[in-house]
Length: 270
Image (cartoon, rainbow, N blue to C red; front, side, top):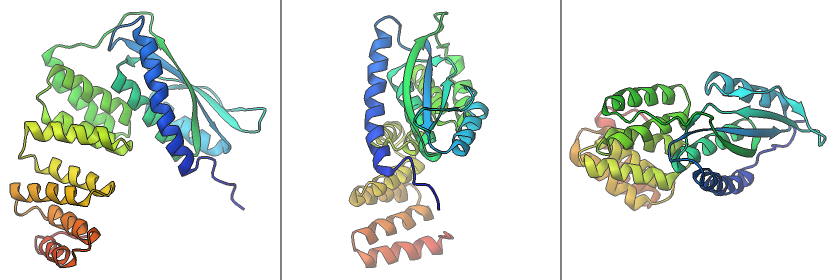
């Protein structure tokens, strides 16, 4: 018989809220003595009851995130624990937030809980390079990190891009996608809004924003977004298909079927 799941959905919801509170406390403590975006490093722990799952997480943290991870230890309570040290990175309320949320989600995927964090300043008072010439390399690095599954650091580098150039809609849009994958709908919507304020014609942002509204049950808002995407591109099949799903959720079946038919006519394959 399979052992019970250590990390339940209800526990995840509870820890999500607690993690956000903890990161705010760590950030405010850090800022008492250090500057915003000064480099810092996290020491943190994962706790689980399946040593095999913890081992898989250990490999991922080393290979994808380049973290220092100690060997698995058995606790007196017959659970398993690993101690980890992050890379040094620029500490800001947002970068710390998404470090913690990414680790929380990684833990969930491996049936482990993020069990304590400490934030340390680095010995050298290192700061990011803010020259305009760094915006494109930062963006490219963020994209590569995202494609490799490192959401925390991808968000970090898109944040650095936006510190250099607050008028880059692609950075807001890309960061929103990563935030959405870390279940931070509210902040993802803010980034989609920022992207669309700068580029109202950004049809992909309209589609993604609509998909997010749908996911949280705001189907009428989703329909507005998909309609805006269609105004920008009358051939955008996915916008018709998604709007059809939104209409179906509102029991407007005739409109749903019409949009689905249009999407199929345009070549969309569900």
